Amino acid sequence: MEEKEIRRKEASAAARERRRKHRKRVVMAEKIAIALAGVVILAGAAATVIYMMPGIRVDKQLSAADEFVETMDYEEAIASCEEALKIDSKSVKAYRAMAGVYLTQEDREAAEQVLYRGWETTQDEGLLQEYCVHLLNDAVADINEGNCSLDTLDKTVLSVESNPYSEDGIKLLDACYERLFMTEESRLFCEEEEDGCGFDRYLDIMNRLLTTCEETQNEELKAETVRFAAPENDTVWLAVKHIEDYHNLLERVAALENTDEIRELTACIEKAMWAQDIFADAFAIFESGDFEPIKDFMQSEEYISIRDQFIEGSMEYWDGKTYIPVSREILMLSREDGKRTFSFADFDECPDTAGVIKVWGAKQEDAGVQRLCISYEPASENGEYYPHKTYEFVYLYSNVTIDGEYVPQMNYRFETRIATPEGTTSTLIGDWGGAHEWNIEY
Image (cartoon, rainbow, N blue to C red; front, side, top):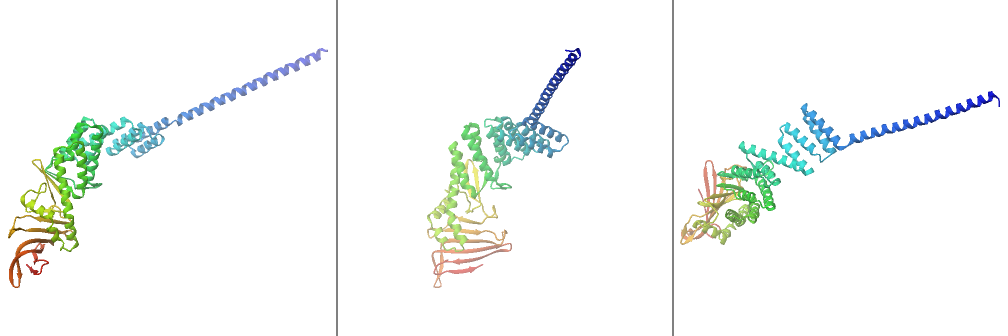
């Protein structure tokens, strides 16, 4: 083979080898590039995953909330905390942060609500303890400022429900009792509040206390609960519409701890309930405008028994002087030397009453027959006391004119009195409904 041909073949082989090595380097470079690209993609994905983790996102929102607080943009700070809770509704940090924002604004009530909401959602004991501390601090502030109310008691009981064995809670219960019920008179049970009747609040609080006592059998808490059930005020006013609820409450307390005080008060309330039942018929008669049936009511065994007990001074629990008033709005519970009595509010004590019945009990006999007397004062007209009407019915032994002569016999008298600022006018009907009825005005 010629030398020239040999060199050509060698050159061709060398070129092929160079091309092979080049292709190998290109393929290797492509593989490296693909691998590097994969690493970059994986790193980016990992960063994205980390950024999207709930904890990181919550922290980001809470950091934003801190920045808003620094600029005093509290509305946006609260919004950031809410956003954090949308990410993780059980984030204890978010609830604490939001409560902190409200406290910075001195909105303690809102902060307490957030802490309680957080405890309900997370059941975190730390949040519950913070909530209780705030409640007790609020209660202490109310008491120290002389503003103790059912709201104060409610806060204290909320704390006691969460920690029934807290000495601070028991002490505050005792302080609330001293402020609310160690006064001469209390109208908590019949006052109307913005969110309802005071008694409804009291009843709710008492039922919660009783439930806690029943669950824990804590003797100190039990003693406080019994005190709240039977206040020691000289006078406690109670709306008549709540008598039955109060009686039911006392029965529940008695099942827990049946003290002499609870028994005495329960008997007094039962007597008041009995009186309301007895006089329901009389009220119906008077409000009908047809007064004739009142004669049968006056002659009933129940009414005569009430009159006789009143005259003899043996009307247990029911207090009166020359008469016993019966109304359907307010009951006055009195306590003197440990004895309980009650009376129903008169017109002077409750001008808005729908009507007052009076049982008159002066001992006065005619021919050996004790007089019967009952009167009724209807509701005031247009909210004004005058003109004030009184209807009085008397069963007595007195003279009746028969054929021009006075003949003494038992008969009914019906008198209508109308009082005005100028004076009183009366219309008297003798032998009312009898064969010898007569009238006189004066």
